[in-house]
Length: 197
Image (cartoon, rainbow, N blue to C red; front, side):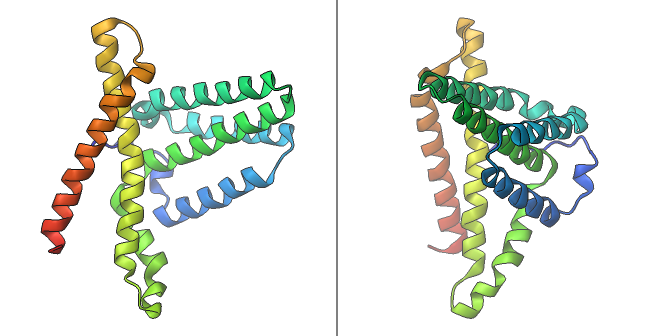
């Protein structure tokens, strides 16, 4: 699987994974508690400054962010068409800010570091008779496949642009689905062999 983690070291790379995850969770929750467009606009400006501060490390995720911002613009247009400019601004700004925070975490944190944090957070579940290592593995796989989805979309879109000179758009859904199912099957087979069923 491809990765959005960047080897270009930034100030955010030096933060522990647990601190970054806690900050993202806190800020992401605040985004959905705030509803004033001007406050969210200020948050969007702060997220843009965060993105800018990461410099070359964001190169691996720039096309992904362009896609996210395009999706935010479509959401805004839809709500404007419904005659709700306030909802349009709030929805688009929330999506853009949350995505920027998530991508900043991804480009500056190794997946293995996130897995260690999840192991620590879920460890108390063992007292309830549950197996925290399985829960953390499931969460890690969910995060990894979400990232892999966007990486594969980007690769397919680049290949389509080289062949046709146009973006792939919705034409990529079928081949992307096939590739994701194949990747899921390979991971499932590997886990079956590793864990003995």
